[in-house]
Length: 268
Image (cartoon, rainbow, N blue to C red):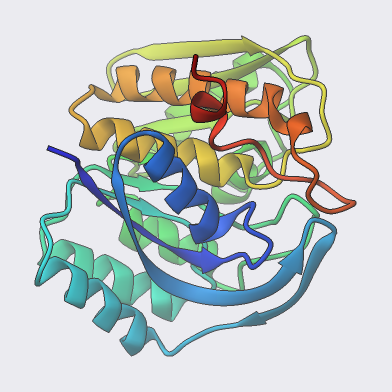
């Protein structure tokens, strides 16, 4: 059976991040992708120039429409720009007893543009952390949730993962892309054990949508029945290869996208 995976996230018209990246990732990994839009953005590889937020009630209607008709094996949550939208997303997912929820707390775009308004951090921590199977912040996002400086070392990443768990996350993957070193290391803590995942850092400017892609890949692998640790490991391998093949694309003059379909383009 082909798993059905729902993305609840914002739209990126340039196709590298947001629901566009999520749907590409789901398809590349053999899942059927669906999307409930939480925001429309005007952006490209160079930055975000505008954001339009739909009414929270309409976001809830989209989620209800999917669950009323489709068996959803996993959910990925991305950009949620207001506390009101966060609350309605949490309410509807709890109502529908959704499982395999991966929360990617998108607070800042690759370009550095802010994607979250006042109160978003606290609302996510209060309403979504208890529901999510996994939260996947990068270093700056973890720092925002914990009200501390950004992780600078492996020890810092591990401590941040533990502390996020202590604040109510069921499991936390703190991504170490911002930590200097030849390897890109991530810390996964599930309340029982610390798991370190490492891959040789890929030197490329094409990093647009990496967080969206990783979290979507984790959701896809969870939908396919992998354990949390297995899903994170497989997703990191997928993203690393998507980064390695990203220079085969010619998209924009800024931070270009990763190559979501590298695994199909290089078959045979």
